[in-house]
Amino acid sequence: MIERQPYLRPTINAPILPVVTAILAAGIFIADTVTGLEIAVDVLYVVIVLMSAGFCQKRGIIVVSAGCMTLTVLSFFLTFTASSGAAAVINDGLGLLAIGATTYLVLRIKSSEVAMQSARAEVAHIARVTTLGELTASIAHEVNQPLAAIVTNGNACLRWLGHNPPNLREARQAAERIVDNGNRASNIIERIRELAKRSPTHKERLNINKPIREIISLTTTEIQQNRISLHTQLSGGLPLVLGDQIQLQQVLLNLILNAIEAMSSTAEGSREMLISSAKNEFGDVLVTVRDSGGGLEAKTLDRLFDAFYTTKPNGMGMGLAISRSIVEAHDGQIWAIPNTPRGAIVQFTLPAAGKKDPRLEAAVFVARG
Image (cartoon, rainbow, N blue to C red; front, side):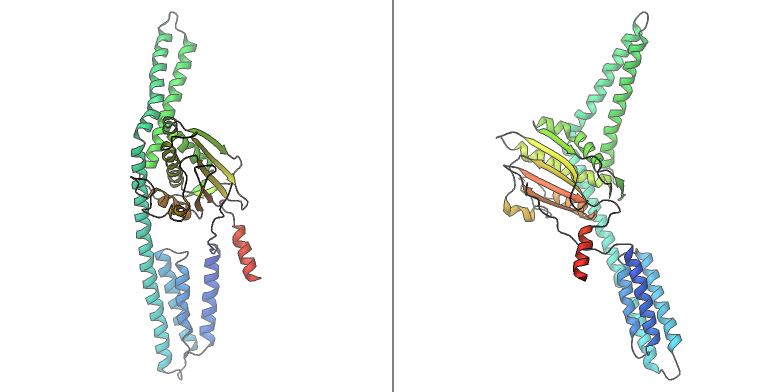
C-alpha cells in the first residue's frame, strides 16, 4: 500500500511561548533602561503584544499590553534626566502609541478569528444535521429493532406470568431483555441527539476506537442495504488523543458515507469497506477508511478537500472540506490516495495527547545543526 506522508506544520509548543515572551519582555525592559532615551527601544514591545496573541484571549492581550506600557513608563522615569530634552518624551510617547495601535489591531484580528470559528462551527453543525437527514430511514430502522424486541419480550413476559403457576424465571429473563433493548434504543437516540445538537467545542482525552464503533453502529443499516461487506481492524492499546468526540464522529460519518456512496454506484466486483485504527511510526493515531468503489482520479487528489469541490452530481463539496478543518483543528492531517485495484483510501492522523511530535524535534535539531 502506498502511504502519503502528511505535511508537517511547524509550531511552537504552547507552554513554551509565554515563557519566551516573558524573557523577551524582560530583555526589552533592560535594554530600554540602559540605553539613552533618544533610542526608541520601547517600540519593540509591539513584538510582545503580537506574541501574546498566540496564547492569550482578548482580555489577556489587554493585560499584556498594559504591562508593556507600564514597563515603558517605568523605564522612562528610571532614565529621564533634566538634560534628556523633549526628544526623549516624544520617543517614549511614540512607543506607547505603537503599543496601543498594535494592541487595537491584534484585538481586531482576534475578534475576526472568533467570528470565523463561530461561522465554521455553524456550517459544521448544519452539515451534521443534513447528513443525519439523509440517514433518516437507517436511523428509523436502527431504533425500530430494539423497540420491536421490547414489544416481543413484553408479550412473552405476560404469557409466562399468565401460566398457572407463573413461570417467574422465564418472565424475569424476558423483563431483563426488555431493559437491555430499552437501553439500546436510548443509546441510539442519545448518539443522534449529540450529533444533532449545537454545542461548543469540548476536547477531552479519548480512545479513537469509541467514536469509530459508535458511527459504525449508526451506519450499519445503510451499509447492509447497499450490500457492502464491512471489515474492521481496530488496534488495542492505542494512545489517547485530545479531541472533541462529536467533531471526530462527524469526520468518520462523512468518510463512511462517502465510501458507501462510492460503492453504491458500482455494479462490478465485490463491495468491500475496511475501517482500521493503528499507531504509526511517529506515535500518532492513524485512522483509515478503505473502499472498493469507483476510485479517485489523479487530477482530483489535490482539490478533493477544497470547499465546494465535488465529484458527485448532487454534492455540495462541503463534507471533506469540513472534515479537513476539523482534523487540522486537532493538529492532525488528512489525505486520500487511490486503492488497489480500485477504490479509494482516506486516512487521517491525530497526535497522541500530551506527546511532543518527534518530527518537529528532529526538524528543530537539524535547523540548529
